[in-house]
Image (cartoon, rainbow over all chains, first blue to last red):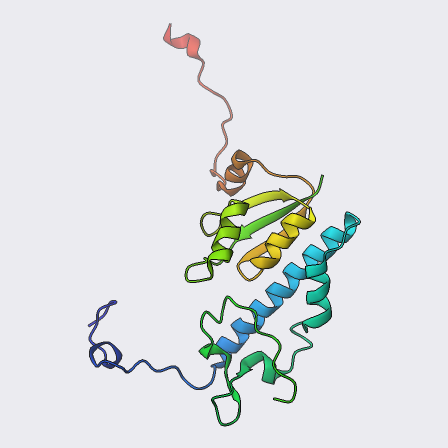
Amino acid sequence: MFGPFRLTTPLSGGLLWKIPWRLSRHQKYRHRERLRRIDLVISTLDTALARQGQTMKKVERWKADMPTEQEMLPKDKYTVFDRKIKTYRKGIHKVPKWTRVSQRLNPPGF
Amino acid sequence: MPYFRITLLRSSIGLPRKTTATLHALGLRKRMATKYLPITPSIAGQIMRIKELVDVKEVDEAMTKQQIRDARRPDPGFYVEKRATTGMMV
C-alpha cells in the first residue's frame, strides 16, 4: 500500500508519467530561492576577487549578460523557449535537471 | 589570508562529466562537504562552473578538519567541576 513499490497507476501501467503543465506556487518559490542563491554566489565571487584586486572575464560576462532574479520577468523565470510548442513556451520544469542548470535567457522576441 | 569556503549542497549525479570532474578537482566528494580554498581567479573559475551546486562564502581564516568537527559537535550539557583525585586509589 505504501512505500516505493506501491501499486499506483503510473507504476503499473506503462507510459503514464505525467508532468503537470505548470509549476505549483511552492515550486515557483523554491525556484526563485535557487535563482537567488546563484546570484549570491556570483556576487560573492565578484566581491572576493575585487578585494584581491582581480577581475575575471567569466564573472564579468555573467554580470553583463544575465539578469538577476529581481530583474527577470516572470515569463523568463518560469517558462523557457521551445520551438515545438504552439506558443513557443514550455514550463521550466520540463527542462532536464532544471533545478541544477541555469536557464535565464531566451531568444529575443519569443 | 582570505579563503573561499565552498560547501557542496547539490549532488552532480546526472550532470555533465565536466561538472563532476570540477567537483573532484576541488576535492568535493560528497554533499555537505566543505573546503577552504584560496581566493584566486582559477578557483573562482571552477566555482563558476559549479555555481548551481555549491554555497560559497568569503572567510578570513581556513578551518582545519578537526575545527569543523568541533564546531559541529553539540553542547554536552554538563561541565566537569572537579575530577576525582587519583591519589585515593593508591
